[in-house]
Amino acid sequence: MAYTAHHPTRALPSDQLRELVPGWGSDLDPADRPNFPKLQFDLEATGAHWDFPERQDQKVPRERSIEHEFLTPVFGTAQPTHGVSGVIRRFAYARFSEARLAHWLLLIAADRVEAGGSHLTSLLTLHPDNPITETGVMAEFTRHGLSSRARESRADLRHGWIDPILVAGPWVIGGYVALRVLRALARR
Image (cartoon, rainbow, N blue to C red):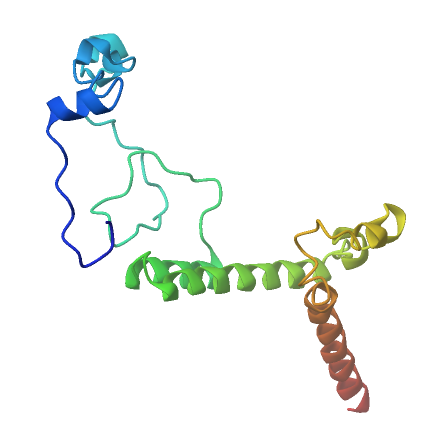
């Protein structure tokens, strides 16, 4: 028995298993296996012309897990790390293994820092974020959102009560802080 302290029982010999189980051992001969050609290492058949692919140029330093000796031969360059969130991400990869919770919490924190920076940047532009339309809140009223939440088959029924707090809470707190700052500046 797996995962117990008892000594496992020994398997029966192949001859007895062939008698007891119809078709047992039918795939022992490689010629009878349906995937046998895949198991052969034949570079001519695959068209591969290299043992290790040539490495992509690294113009900007990329994150590399400490479990790996080197960066993979090909990697993404569309979103290079930048700013405070980039510093947090580089620290997470340089200091903690991917098996550690701290690694992933730091990456989540970096995402939150970058999202906050994006919100602040949008406030400084002529087109700030609109939390009402961009979060899909209006669909609750126009696309039968409230009635669909009453169905028992919904997986999000248990945490549905906290969703408005998590979505609107940061905006309400940010608005309150901005109002306090504006009042303090107006008093001066």
